[in-house]
Amino acid sequence: MTLNRNRILSVRHFDALPSTNDYLREHWLEEEDMFTVRAIAQTKGRGRLQREWASPVGGLWFSVLFKNITETPSHYQRLLGVAALSAIEALESHLSKIAAPSRTLGARFYLKWPNDLVYTTGGPNFTKIGGILQENVVLSETRACIVGVGINVNNPIPADLREKAVSLQELFLAEVPIEDLLRGILLKVVAWRTDVTRVLQIWRQRSLLQRGSQVEIYSESEGLTLHGEILDTPVESIELLCANGVRRRFFAGDVRLCAANPAEGSPRRL
Image (cartoon, rainbow, N blue to C red; front, side, top):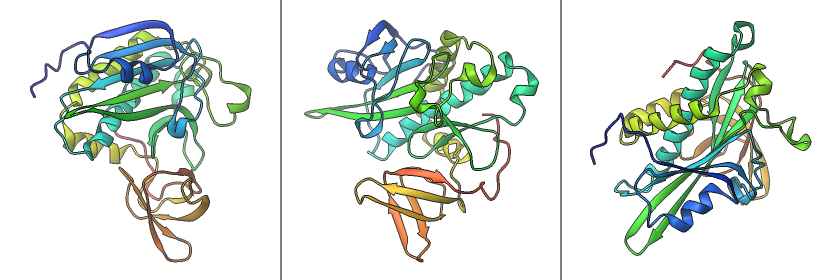
């Protein structure tokens, strides 16, 4: 499939939707490849494991439809990576334009496995600024992938989430131009759509969790928390050397970083 890298994706805007992912699940057969839907607010936004996702006015809530899927199922996670890493690149670009230097020094954006966009100024502490929700849809021999992106931009953060989440406006004391941010993300989606090797390489570079990171992971399926060292940068799964010496592989779970990454440094601009 040949793509025009200067293509501007078609975006359908709504004042409000229950969920942009749900909208595409209902309409994916009739829409074109890389069709995008955006809602000013979501009334039933959701994240992984059907968790509620607060999506008020002021944030960036959108989903992209990938059709003509010919890659193996393992590439679906790469599609999630394209959206997440595009968002990180666009956020860093906007950060350098709108924030005072004293506020941006040491600021870093990463993807935290399995689906979080996070902000950190170093060390093990981080704050969530967004997330990704990737879903597959199939009808007979036709299949597609939907990637939803939610970013706290200028929106208020609910009181019960303020210890874990933050908006860009609150971080940098400046209102972020949402339309420009969306455009920057979608241009990267087009540019990286078929570049599987590059997407994987960048994913590894910009992962908050790296080989040697000390973490705690909660497995929903087993209902237990394990502590250990990451054996390789997680992409589709995370391999952990547990404190008891046992190696375990997880394909989902909630991860807490217990110590700074062993080779932590400023991320390369993409």
